[in-house]
Image 1 (tube, rainbow, N blue to C red):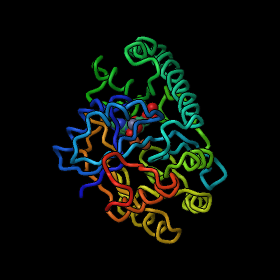
Image 2: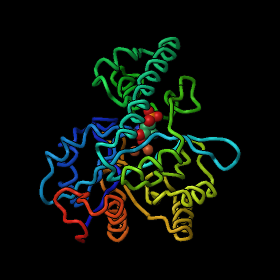
Image 3: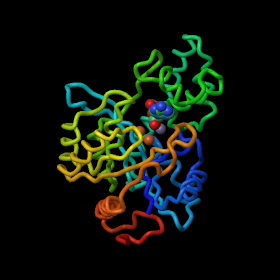
Image 4: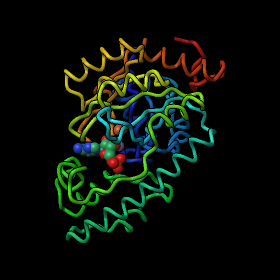
Length: 296
Ligand code: AMP
Ligand code: ZN
Ligand code: FE
Ligand code: FE
């Protein structure tokens, strides 16, 4: 089994449509794939439609959250939600709120960039995306690449799009404990994404993960391209101490990032435990398409 539990399609800020993403996954030998677009479930239907029988598809989403940092302040954090009820209205409403704020922020960052002399028109950029899109910095990065300002989207993140850069604007983010509770109330499983991805900016202290574990968090993403060996070891120890599930994932974004699909993977036993939790919370209802509840 090759299990990749964190990938993005062009419905958020990846570069492949859900159908193309599934084809890429199958080509790379992936047998279990989670589609985890930012703050939306809009890609789920196309992915389910395109799913070949050999691939297990895990419905997921990456939630934009804000967390205590454990040092008296706050940091933004990403939370992966898996197998929650697609019809849950609280999650749908919260994701819509975040998407609206994301588009406002593209406008605001675009204005700052234009004022600074960069050839970016946030409004025009948004007009090219679906009306309800979770627009993000990678979309601005793509526009900067198209305009020849940078040589790659990753290069755009080094300065122009950086959190501590001159044009950054924050968006609305859900308090992380609220997001955990929402995902669980909708029958889903909540996993803290790339908790120690320090190159992106300040991260939570270990104490925050302990507190969240006590408050219902299900797991932590340990093997992630942005985690160094020491941080992986620390997260693995934390998981062992608190009973959190351990996942590993590529966080694939197509050509918006340099990471290959399945560059990091999840152990089958951890995946089975994750599915088991969702099945328990859904009181036995089938949670995975084409897969009997409880089948290994
Ligand atoms: P946003 O959610 O709009 O703040 O943008 C953050 C997104 O950009 C996340 O999905 C990251 O995975 C992605 N990202 C962060 N750093 C980079 C990078 N160096 N190159 C490409 N994408 C990145
Ligand atoms: Zn992304
Ligand atoms: Fe993320
Ligand atoms: Fe991601």
